[in-house]
Image (cartoon, rainbow over all chains, first blue to last red; front, side):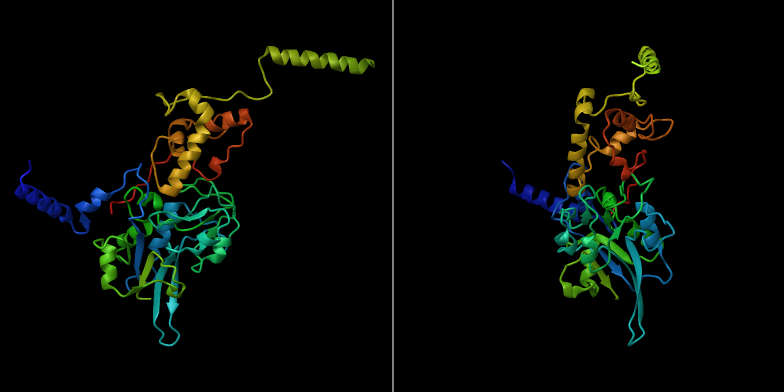
Length: 243
Length: 126
């Protein structure tokens, strides 16, 4: 029935349309791939972050502030026990004196030690690579905090009130960076990435590591980026350039 | 029976019957005020019996699989059932707390979850 010439033309046209850029960084094919609320997270996607320490501006804490605001992490004035999902780490090479700084948060490992040690299964890795704590199952034993080589997790020591509707959290559970999973599920980006871009630094890039056409995958091909503690072979989703 | 004790017994019976006549019970009746008219996500009798099952099921799907449908979400309950006066489902006249207090069932959802409705903070498009 069908005309092979016409079919071939339609196929080419569809491919051209899908690859067409409607704005820099936004492509139709990505918009089409945005997940609907009833669709489960897919293993085809691996969410990741690229942190460029060369662009991380001295004295700036926009990412940390944005994280605290987004997730409702209040400052109790007791910093030793306050939850800390993201922190700025200052690095200095004692031999050369070279200094660098970069935000460090949960590295969303492909082989997360926190998940390995969790006795209840509360620590888990979602299909799309985001490492989370199911607080309904967490018993607050803190094994995961000891297992994490990045010191990414915090324990909630005190009763909380006025939590964000999107970020339920409470006393007795361990928690860490969720990669702003509530925003990602709606097709957004993590608050820290947005704040870094808004501050004009653009030191953080969020995207799908599995998609060779994504901005983060392209940047990772260009930039000599590495994993923190690559010797542990945890294959973290957060990569660093310039550290 | 010694006289003072008998008097006390009579008094106690009298007091109890007065309370009964006034319709007072030992436990305050729950306040089921639905300020937002319209139908719930399931029939009322189903919700009364099974709301906790819907919530448990939804919570696992949301936390582990990232399925964020509104139908059986706790945030959806709060959105409709928060009292206009307090803006919350908690408090002595709160939709959730008053009924749980009556049934004697501990309500610990809101130790972590927000008891007040709040707009979903949508992130910018990727």
